[in-house]
Image 1 (cartoon, rainbow, N blue to C red):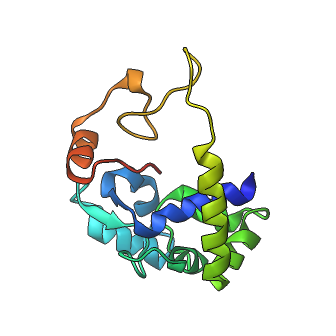
Image 2: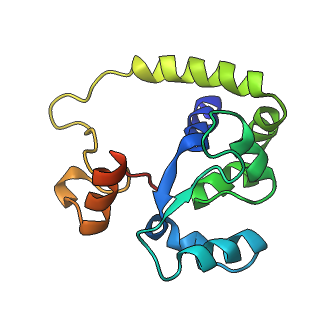
Length: 154
C-alpha cells in the first residue's frame, strides 16, 4: 500500500548513509542541496551523511519537511515528492507529526506480519538493501555494517 511505502520511508528520519550510497544524487549539481552533498561527499565516499538534515537525532516528521525543500538524500526520497500519488501523503506527514506517527505504527505492525521467506522464494538481505546475498559484499558495505550495524540503500 502506498501509505505504507511513504510512512516506512520515514525511518530515514534517524538514519545515516555512506556518501558512496547516493553518488547519483550528489553528482547532479542541479540544485543547492545536491551541490552541498557533492561538496561534503565527493572525496570521501565512506563519510556518513544524515538522511534527515533538519533533526537527524530525533524521530519526528522533519524528514518529510526536508523533502518539501528538495532536501532528500536518496533519489528514492525525492521520488516520493515528485510522484502524484505519494506527494500528498508526504505533504500530510510534513504538516502533521501525529499523522506520520499513526501511519508509521500501523505500517510497522503490518510489516511485522509479513511471513518470513520460505525455500528459494525471496531473501532477507544480510549485507545491503541493494545487493542480494549471492552478490556478497564489498569493503564499503562491510565498513557500514561494522560501524552502524546496517547499510541503507538509495
